[in-house]
Length: 168
Image (cartoon, rainbow, N blue to C red; front, top):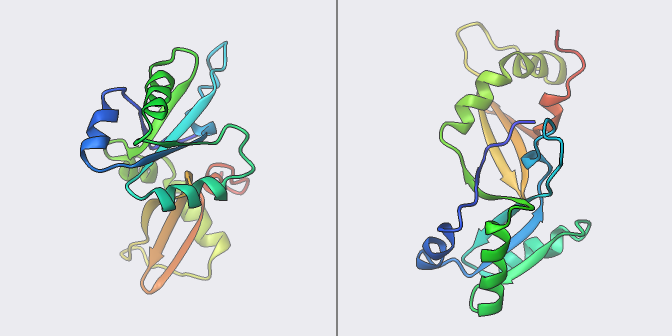
């Protein structure tokens, strides 16, 4: 699985606070797991927000996640919990900040998948010289692929590219 997000460094907490971040939403993040490791550590995504109301909305939207938590940074106990979580050796934590060149890396990795998707799932007919642009988008911690061709745009979960059965 392609993981565009950066590891959450404990030093980020004070930087986020200085930038006006008011809350973090923790959610399970399967893309952060390494299937090759003998012991599978739980993986979480910490999504920062400068608006507590929007953080609460995100938290409410992921009710299905048993690991979800809302941390309000004006609460010293919550700050300590976040620090403990991101410093833990028993879990992996990622921030919603994307890694350097994530869009370019994903486009290169999924190039054949993108072409197959366009050919099999759209009615677009781009010429060889025409460009179908690719980008990553994120909604409530889920990673989406976004394709644009002229005035047309389509957005779908990245898993659809990763799990294509019709790509040779």
